[in-house]
Image (tube, rainbow, N blue to C red):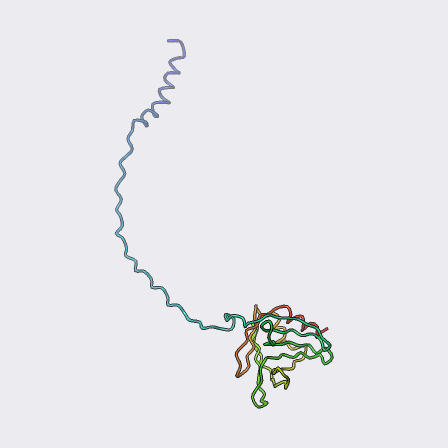
Amino acid sequence: MPPGSYDYTMRFIILTLPLILLACAKDPAPQPQATPAPVAIAPKPMPAPVSLGETWQDAPHSSGDWVYRRDARGSVALFGPNGADASFIIRCDSAARRIYLSRAGAFPGGDSGMMTIRASSGLKSFAVKNNGDTPAYIAATLPVNEPQLDAMAFSRGRFLVSVKGGADLVIPSWPEIARVIEDCRT
């Protein structure tokens, strides 16, 4: 043997022997593990559906669209079906610096009543009376700084107009409302 080859051979055997032994070794058989007994889980009953009823925030909008106009008295926004008299009107009387909220209809025998405006930020009622015109409307007169006007303009998508004896109107909060209010305040 050439000198030094013995050292290389021994090193080779010492380094490869553990690898050879590992290659020949068998994997230990897996130990059977105890399987836990299945636990019966009773299904939870589904909660009964809650009937919230139809609230004004969930009710569909009344039929119609808003239209904005200017005339000699000031500006006006009319809400209602196309081709028909308006169901609801917001009018700015610039000279008087007043805003009129009018709803189609009339109280019998010239009676008066209340109009309730409900917005997402609250509600308020106003005294109303027949306007005596044709077509008939009941109207409330408000100062331009009335906070409920802003509540109507900035209500979350809609506001509600209620008058005793008439069907409620669920009216969308469109920009025409704020425009009439701002026209009267400037």
